[in-house]
Length: 145
Image 1 (cartoon, helix red, strand yellow):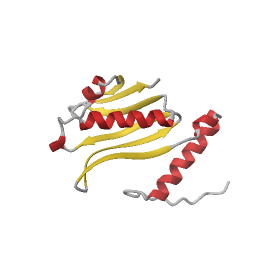
Image 2 (tube, one colour):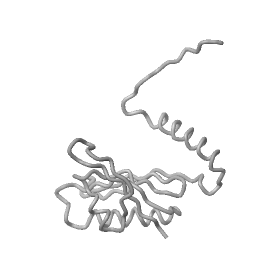
Image 3 (cartoon, helix red, strand yellow):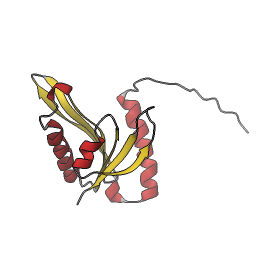
């Protein structure tokens, strides 16, 4: 049996081409197992609010398999309490609906905003206790109609 030579490389902040390649290969494999034409659509997008050219709130989302992974939702600390997070979440949910998402899923650390999502109809379906140390990580989802 022939011995293969591998090159191993760790890259901080991999470029878009590498990310696209790896996500594409994973999707290609996954779709071959799902065998569903209606699961082929993917979309990686952001929604941002800016004030005088500076982003003050934003969300990163990845849509695949008819589900929307809300990877992050952030509002500048000085702008909190003005319903920007609520408006941003509503826009994420609206976009998810346009894409045909059946659910939105995310995680939030206890010191971030799990109560915010629970307030807007998200349900907790998992937890990693004591991660990071002294805190919990909550997994949440909302089924869309």
